[in-house]
Length: 464
Image (cartoon, rainbow, N blue to C red):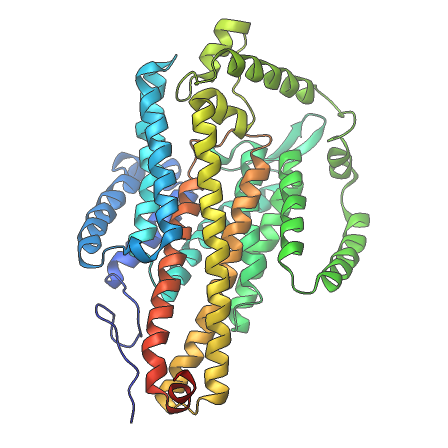
């Protein structure tokens, strides 16, 4: 009987992949859940012992150890190589700006407490998530952490505990400081939507499909009741991306149109009016005028300082020049004013590197799914080979959807960036880590499949 080849460094029972010890995977999942649930903000004891920091130290040590035993082969990963180059250049742009920053103390604090801290997540994902099961575990932890946040706000919407009037409408807030603002709550809710939208049809188990519905429902509740026009724009931007990814575009439009026609009549009028105010008059307040004023100030500061004013230093320079200190409320002007034209070019290079790598990886998973299907149908595999091919086909379909979801997540963050300043947030490091991880898994699957083909007689004959 022909055996399916095993690759070095795998766990028993799984083919062609490298995985860290189970306890390390569990710690990584806990770290992701703690990060999104904000354990330190919920329990004083967890803040006192700095639970995220402790888990981060353990994961850093594990990453260094396992990176030596299973190094990244960048020579065969051009997409990953570009992403790492872009990250390195972005770090260089920030480091150069630190001693020149208009607000040096704040610049150093933001760089160490946010940039370096969040960038470690890219390291953890890239080194420790390198198999289909690893991707599943990581995404499970991410969705679970976000679900806890959205469900408590959704309950707060119906109980009245987290919803109160703001700008003329009732707006939903988060339960912990990081999600307190409705725009922040809408942002974390929208981050979950791409993963559920693409993973739901890719998950074969009915139980897991049902498990994905509550996070989707609570995310949409948070999005609607937040009254966040930023979130609404991101939602419709994602719908465009989703349609572009659809293979049956006309059917997608028909289904989306029917759902929209059924949903609009039951939506509260105040939130419909809030959406309409994007291009019209606000019910109360003048936030749009304030945003226009900020944008005009940001453009003026950038024109005067084309090489940047330093990390997180825009509010200080704005205060000096105009007597106003609010931040940019725009990701792209935040990058331009903080890091200069060179930083803006590098940031766009990073986005391009991630999206182009994800597109290439998506095609590779599609090819692997097709090859697995054809091998099952035409290759006359034995029982063990067939089981391996069926598992590979399921993995490839799931990972293709995870790749689409990651690109959709980036699409959402870029849309949110039109009205928010997120340069020093975790989102880019989360996306970069997943991009590298998915590229590594695709490479491992291709290599494993190439080793398996000669062991299947009919396929070996066709490959000669």
